[in-house]
Image (cartoon, rainbow, N blue to C red; front, side, top):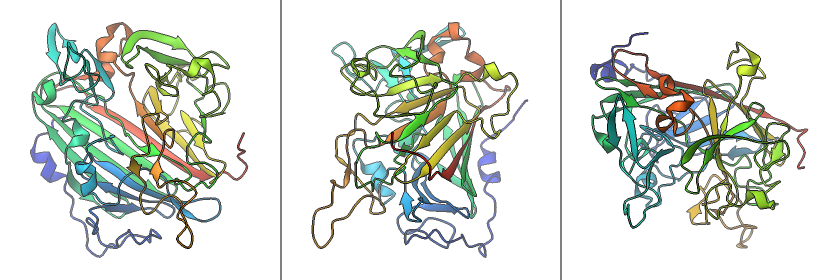
Amino acid sequence: MRLQVGLAALGALALPIASALSPRSAGSSHATSDLGPDENGFWWIHSEDLSAAFIPYGASIAKLLIHDKYGIQRDIVAGFDNATAYELDPTHPHLGGVPGRYANRIQNSTFEIDGEIFHTDANENPTAEAPNGANTLHGGHNGWDFRSFTVVSHSNDSITFSIVDPDGEQGFPGEVISYITYTLRDLTWDFKMVAIATTKKTPIMLSSHTYWNLDGFANNETNTALNHTLYLPYSGQRVGVDNILVPTGDILANKRGSVNDFWSAPKQIGADLESPEALGNCGFNCTGYDNCWIVNRGQKGQYDWRAEGGYVARLQSAWSGIQLDVYTDQDAFQMYSCGGQDGSLPLKTSQGLFGADGEAPAFPRTIPKYGCLVMEVEEWVGGINHPEWQRESKQIFGPGGDPYVLQASYVFSINTTATTS
C-alpha cells in the first residue's frame, strides 16, 4: 500500500464537530458536556459504560472511569488531577503517553540502516564513559511523550492526536508524521497508531505506556497491584536482556512453573516474588517484572486478532471484579510491575482511600512499589539492533512504503467469580 501524506493532512483531518453534540454522562464531576478541554485541560470521550480523559502532552490517557462489581466508579489509570502537572513533573514516569519515535531501549544509542550508523539521544544508565547514558529509552530526552500533540479531531466517543517529528530529532533520520486515535465503544477502549516516514528510512515503534490499577488504588486490603492476576496464553518465550534491560539477542523460554510463566495458567503478579529467580529478573538488583514476552500466535495458523477469545493478555482483580482483556495486532507484550515507584507519585482525587472524620486513610495517598502495572503492546523490543530476528519490515519504514500501524482493543468486563488466589 502506498500512502502519500503531507503536512497539509494535519489540517485536513481536523473534522468539523457539531456543537449540538453532548457527551453521555461520565458520572464524574471532572467530566464536561462540552467538546474541547475541561477546566483541568482534559479532553473527554465516552461510551455507554466507560469515560476517558486525554491530554495533548504525549497524547496521554489521564483518566479511565468504569464501575466495579459493586457499582462504584473507579479511575483505574495513574495520572495527575491537572493536565499542566504532566509537563511540570521532573520525574516524568511516562504516565499514559505514547513513547516514540522508538519505544523501549536502543542498545548503545545506535542503530544501522543500509550501512549507515545513526546515534540517538542517550538518556538512561549514565556511566563515567557515557555521562548522558549508556542507552536510549523511549526516544530520548525529548521523546514523543515529552511533547504536545495537536488535537485534529474530537467527538463524543473518539479523539485523534497528531505529531510531526522532524528529521534529525533525537538523532533519528527523516521526518515522521503520526496520528493517534482513541475511541470508546460499550466496554472497549480502542486505539490505533499510524506513523508515516515521509523522507528517509527510519525506525518506528510505538505503544501506550499506561499505568494500571484495576482497584482504582482504593483496595482497603492492599495498596499494591500484586493481587492482580495476569494470563498471557501465547507467551511461552521472552526477550532476553542484560542487567540494564537492553536486549541481548537471546530468546528465552518461560518454563512451566518459572517466575516468567504466565502462559500455562493465570497467576497473581506477586505469586513468585519471593523466589530467588525473581531477583534480577527486571535488571540489576531488581525483583519483579520489566520484561518483553513474545506473542506466539503462529501455532494457531491464520488468526483474526480481534476474534473473541483471542486476547494476548488478561488482567483481573478479584477485589474490584474488573477484568481487562487485551487484543492487538502486535507480536510482543511488555509488563512492568512498577518496582521503581517509591511512594512519591500522588494519587488523583478520583482515586484511593480517604480517612473518615479527620482520621488518616488506611494507606498513604501515593503509589508505592508494586502499586501498579504498565502493559505495553508493541513489536519485539530492540529489534533494530538484532537483524537475526528478521523484524526489519515491522520496525524500519521509509517513504513510499507501508506506514507503521499499531492497533489494540482493551475490552473490560466485570468478573464476579474471580478468586484472590
